[in-house]
Every structure is written in structure tokens, then in C-alpha cells.
View (tube, rainbow, N blue to C red):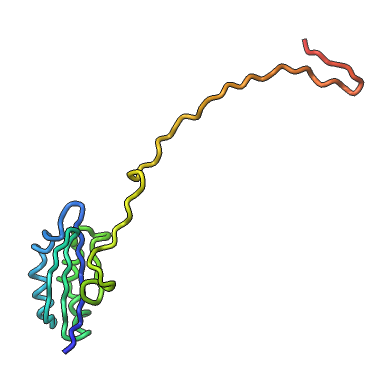
Length: 142
């Protein structure tokens, strides 16, 4: 019998942890998974959150499980609603690496340089004579 594995990563959020989310939603998720044909499951804690791996008997069981309102509500309630949920087929990640991709640190603490006041230079204009006319006559203003 070939099992169809699916992975659900829950990342820690700014105000709550994935462990706290697990305490609230584990029972609902696992009872829904078992009732829809889940054969095995495993939780893996990491410093960035949790990984839940679920194995179903057949390929049709996963979409039925995923569309349950209780499952959708649990996944909508992850600690980081924007970037905190990753769902993919396979076990432990499609790339085989269990650490999440993180953005690279910003150089210089991510701060913009402070605005500097421009250096003022003193410019002195020279006094000039008006240009002579065609006839060579200079016009002086009094």
C-alpha cells in the first residue's frame, strides 16, 4: 500500500507561537484526518514553528480533508496569516531540506542613511562692464 504524504508548515507569528496554535487545533485536525483516511501523522517542532506530516490511503482523501470547514478554519487561524502557512505534497519538504527559507539579513541594519544638509559654498559674482556696442560706445548706467 502506497501512502500519499502531505506536509503542513506552521510558522511562528509576531504575537503567538505555532505550539500554541497546535494546542488549540490539534484535536480537530487529527480527528478530521483520521475520519478521512489518514494512516499516519507526525508533528515535528523546529525553532521557527511546526511541521505536520499526514499520510492518506489514496490521493482523493487529501482534497476532501482540505475542504472541510473545520480544517479551513484551523489553517486560517495560523499565528502569521500572511507568511505563516506552507502546504505541499511529500514528506518533510519538496526539496528535502527541513529548514525554511528566510530572507537574507539587510545590510546596515536595514536603515536608510540619515539625510545630510548640503555643504554651502560661497559664490561672489564679479562686477563687469557692459559690453560695448557695435560702434564701440560704452553705456554706463548712473
